[in-house]
Amino acid sequence: MEKAWDIQPRPGESITVAVIDTGVAFMNATIRTNILGFRSNGVLYPPIPNATIPYAAATQLVTDGRFVAPHDFPNNTSTPLDFDGHGTHVSGTIGQLTNDGIGTAGVAFNVKLMPLKVLCSDWDVLFGTPAARCSTDDQVALAIRYAADNGAKIINMSLGRTSPSTCATNRNAPRLRAG
Image 1 (cartoon, rainbow, N blue to C red):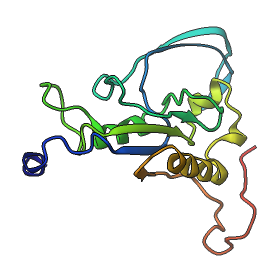
Image 2 (tube, rainbow, N blue to C red; image 1 turned 45 degrees about the vertical axis):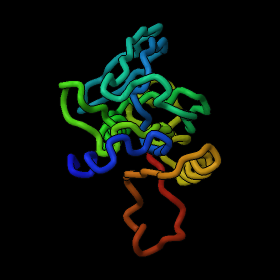
Image 3 (tube, one colour; image 1 turned 135 degrees about the horizontal axis):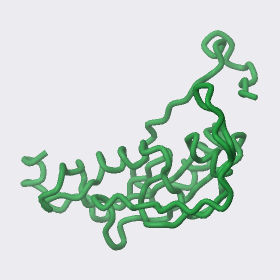
């Protein structure tokens, strides 16, 4: 990348890359929520009412004016916070800052980023996002349209999820949902 940056030292300042994923840690926030009780590996964890959780931005991504038109599709808000980490990781690979003596550099370290959340983690559901609105094809399609309508020149979608076991043999079968 260094040779490419020598040829074009400030590439991408006018380019917006939409990252359709789990969101991005693009801002500091305080989350106030009622955490639902859950079971994991046979252990029952009780609900936590009135939880206050600090949330930190990924400092290697955040600069003034860096993030444009962020959107959380499962919750229909403008704050697509990443509770999984994947969308933040992908955004760092694309656009992590450079020449600051910290960590590595993103491939296009000065592009604008458009965080678009379509995938949910277990934490999203524990914080109250209905599982039925998470990780659906229609949410992905809405995000693609939104990105195009809001100036994204590049769309990154490194998406994955489980599918019914008959997916490859019966593409038109309705998706099975966990109860």
